[in-house]
Image (spheres, one colour):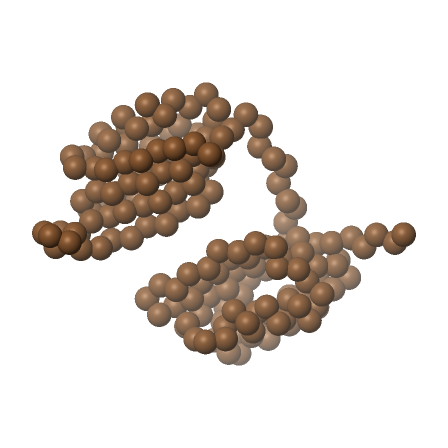
Amino acid sequence: MLRVMRDTLVLTVIGTDRTGLVQSVAEKISAAGGNWEESRMARLAGQFAGILLVTVDKTRSDELVASLRGLEGAGLTITARATALPAAPVATRLVKLSLTAHDRPGIVRDITKILAERDLNVEELETEVASAPMSGEAMFSAHARVLAPAALSLQDLRGALEALGGELMLDLETE
């Protein structure tokens, strides 16, 4: 049996949001025989941004990238980077972090500094600033999935994050 070698590509897509944008990217991938493996996409301030993982036969990889570049005329900026799938990390665990606090400049920097100091790798991060229902104050919220060393003390992590300020609500759980 002939085994076809596949390239793994990480694509980024950004442009003014419009109906059919994701479909136009999906059609190009499908037409080149590619497989849409995984993605994260969002609309922010009228812009659409996405990152996706695609596999495609090595012989059609250049064709796919050229085809996607054709969408740039429709206002999309697309990058493609060939990559290898990483080996599974050893001696780690996934930690879910949910945090709500009064918003202030530098809060993301301070949170990510605490994570980096403890060798936590951010796998996913969603943040938002919204008005508190009763007071109208700006409230920051973050939801993250981080890859943590197996020896990480959740109490230490909790203490460091809680030291960022009063009235901080924090939930940590392992998967």
